[in-house]
Image (cartoon, rainbow, N blue to C red; front, side):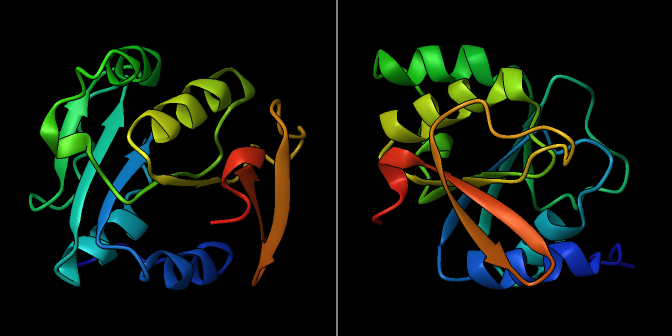
Length: 145
């Protein structure tokens, strides 16, 4: 049984369906969007510093690692092939991960979008977009894509 997608993420999921290959940063314990994308046959990778969530579909590639390390590797052209994606996205992305997430997306030439924890503004320059009930941020560099 697939996890239920919260209303605040449903419009973001719809926006994501325009892409083919995905990386979810900091998937945590709420893998509903990743599971839905995988169920639709999309190629998806997810990373988190914690272990693989039990609820995460087995069809989603998962790596226990830091976005900081992955961004550093990508900037040196050492990102593993499975991370050469069309879009990098994250939900409730803390300020300390936003810059590395944007750096990684830039290094692999992917679009980037994220939501914040809600009580804090983005820590990097962004363009704001409202999708359904969610406020989504795109790093300034990616606003015209």
